[in-house]
Length: 152
Image 1 (cartoon, rainbow, N blue to C red):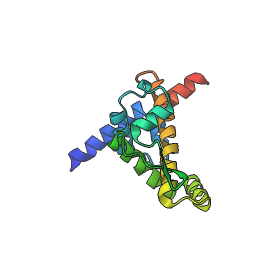
Image 2: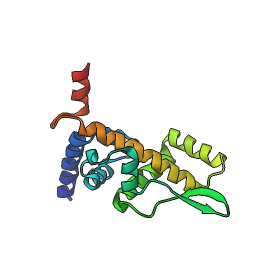
Image 3: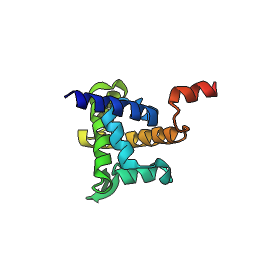
Image 4: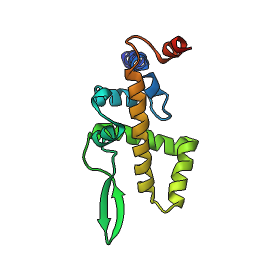
C-alpha cells in the first residue's frame, strides 16, 4: 500500500509541473488531469476550442423532432476524455456555487437536468482547452508561479 501512495505523490508532482492551470479548475483532481493530459496528447494540434470539443465528444449535435430544434449529447469523440469532463461537471454540479447557479438558471429556462449538464460539459470543455493551451505555452520545467513571477 505504501507503493501506491508513492505513485500518487509522484503523479501529483508530475501533473503539477505539466498542467498547473488544469489543476486550478474546480473539480479537476490529479487523476482527472492525468487522464485529460494523456488523452489529449498535445492540445496545439487542435485549431480551436470547437475542434477540441468535437474531439472530446462534448460538442452538441443538432436534432429536430416535430419541428422543434434542440441539441443532444454527441455519441462520437474520445469517450475517455468525455468521461473526464463529465466527472468535472458532476463535481462542480454538487460543490461549486457558480456551476450550481448556472445549472439552476438553465433549468429555470426550461432545460432538463441532462440538457443542463450537457451545456455545462460544453463550457467546461472550453475551460479545459484554455487551461491546456496556457500550460502548453509554459517553458519545460516551469510552473505557473514561476511564469507569473517572470511576467511581473
